[in-house]
Length: 231
Image (cartoon, rainbow, N blue to C red; front, side, top):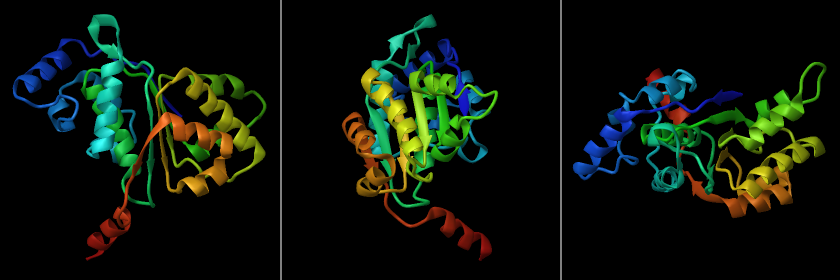
């Protein structure tokens, strides 16, 4: 699991946002490439998987979610906003349509917008593997940390093998975040009917209420890239 503490952005991000605003450009929706000088973004990129270090969130619903989360943040040290309560986001679609790209792009966009961000990112399979009881490991403490984290990214929700134990873990995690209205960004290859079968009715019901939904369609981009490379 990746646990990233909030990075103070300072005056650079605020000056960047002011310059973009005076030019009629939304600083949150602007290209992440324009925000590369932000120290917090550069620091975060060293912790983001290499494949997604230049990811850009460009889907309109994802961009709107980033804007809303950034606007709702409470001022912290230096006046930079921090993650507060807000809506969650569920990005669904077939394999290879860019769901993880959009998720990490959203994280990068929040940091580029000047949000002081502490976040965790984990795949569903790694989540259960890390929390599974074993000697010398405090899974309960780790679950509490995940549940309380200001922003949690869960990739491939519903991909892990289902069991009563995984349903209980997912319920406890999502229920806490649902009750506290903490933003959760999840991706899944499954439609809601199949997802409900994998994570349980109670979890699916809470996700449906707490999260805006994005459906990405199209062909598998990874397969297309392989064909281009082989040509």
